[in-house]
Length: 167
Image 1 (cartoon, helix red, strand yellow):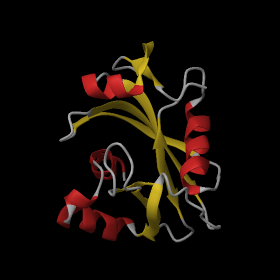
Image 2 (cartoon, helix red, strand yellow):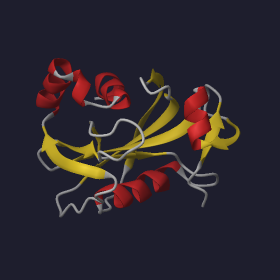
Image 3 (cartoon, helix red, strand yellow):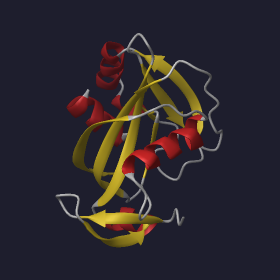
Image 4 (cartoon, helix red, strand yellow):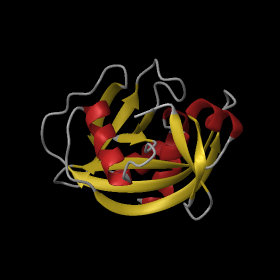
């Protein structure tokens, strides 16, 4: 599996090729992504603070896990794989929705993604990978939306878009 490749897609999520991940972000090319949102039994959302060593959006709060599926990898399996890699657990995920968005960053990179969103529930132990995750917590959607409104600089661009448009 070459984790340096992303799947390029058109606006209908039809595959049109592959590209090196960094180049796709530098050139703002539309590519496929997956996002995992995890909730506890009371409906609070698990969010993570990205590790300070991440190449973009370091130290910002975001959803439980996100990644780019690899060529020939099913979207749901990519989301489940990344949840284990980032947060150290697995849980069954269910397809929620898709969202096409474009978010430029101050460092010259652009997230231009056709994102497949998955949700799941989890109550067990969380063992995040330190190279990926600096911190984590559960928060109610109401309090999360309030924090995003009052302190948007503390959250990743894609997370703000997804929270406002899908949750």
